[in-house]
Length: 255
Ligand SMILES: N[C@@H](CCC(=O)N[C@@H](CS)C(=O)NCC(=O)O)C(=O)O
Image (cartoon, rainbow, N blue to C red; front, side):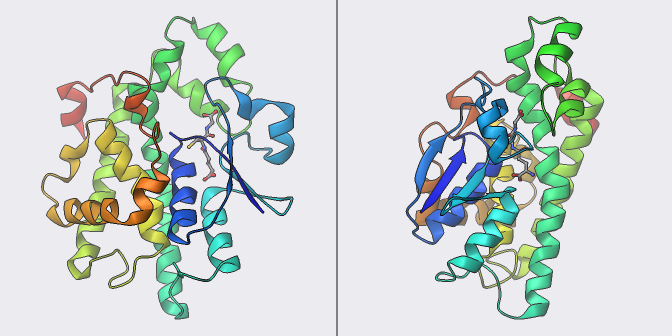
């Protein structure tokens, strides 16, 4: 039995839902309400000490970290393989995955929090925010402290946009020999970057790929796959739930 502890809007959960949908696997939907801080309860922390979603529980055994979960699912359920068989190709896919985790997956959090999530806290003063919101998060304490109740500095947001633009440029180059990042095959590399691209679109940042037609076409192809609408169930977009604060022109132009 596969149980997924996840949140619809969580980009890391979206990756795992895409893998489950590509493979046509059945899973038990265990929703975690992040706004209600259900991921910080002792019961959830016992499952995932990082206090983040997603967590996969397979026959009672918890597996944490979204990319690890994606690779685990691909190993245990090899039907519809999402990893190349050739070791050199596999290494190239993993290099993409590490880059995508280090760069866009981290970068997209900054505008996501700045434009939407931080607004939940804007009435708190700095001291209350640190004590009641930031310091209780095992993995994200310093990320929240850096943000503060008013959101990130425009320098932080611009730096993140720059990293997202770098990602788009690398994708555009790779897609010259598409249709997918690794060439002919759709792999975990495509899945790992999909939530970052989709979130950019949700936050009104799709101008980042204005001059990257290969990325625009790739994103259309990803959305046309049957797995997409299954993984992006109702309520998966931040903009469906909370207002999105647009970025100023200066912040957009500063990158
Ligand atoms: N490396 C982890 C990161 C997971 C992560 O950051 N999850 C976010 C949602 S996408 C979360 O649970 N955040 C909780 C919080 O902000 O307190 C993974 O890939 O699973």
